[in-house]
Amino acid sequence: MALHAEHLPAGVAAQLLEQEVLVFAVGDEHSDTAQFSERYGFASDDCANTIVLRYRKDGADHYAAVVTLGSNRLDVNGAVKQCLGAQRLSFAKREVATELTAMEFGGITAFGLPDGMRVLVDAAVMQRAFVVMGAGVRKTKLLLAPALLKSLPQVDIAALTLE
Image (cartoon, rainbow, N blue to C red; front, side, top):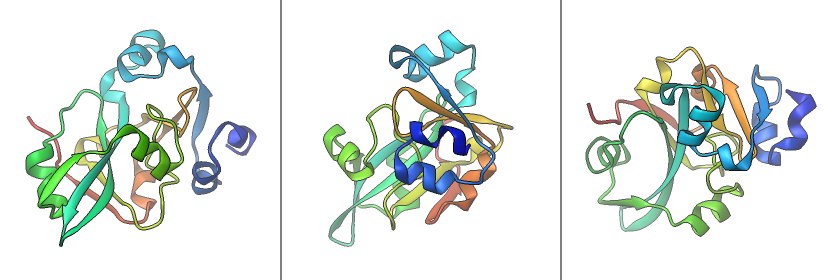
């Protein structure tokens, strides 16, 4: 992993240091899940996307990251809202998500997020042997065992997707 740390944002590299993670380059035009899957032969079940949400709780706005498989649809207004204890919930605006995470839109990952940011991981992600995730930049991906997600601070694993 250390040999490829220069291809990752500093916060992502620092959190993954000493972990068993394969870091690899992809073409920017193949970074989005559907194009990535088609180009590199990974099923969408093997791709874990990280989405930044804005939610209102106790009269204040907060942000959380949600990790879900590319093949699944989040139950945003049900399971995700309940897990966060949110009164209102929406997808974070692109410019807010990139500024908050210091990552590129379309490459945001659960690793290297700001201190105190909650991370929700859909239980289906944890059932995979390995997943491909963003690496903080669009031109780089991570291949890792989902168990690494359990080591993140503020992480909750729950059923977050629709059947």
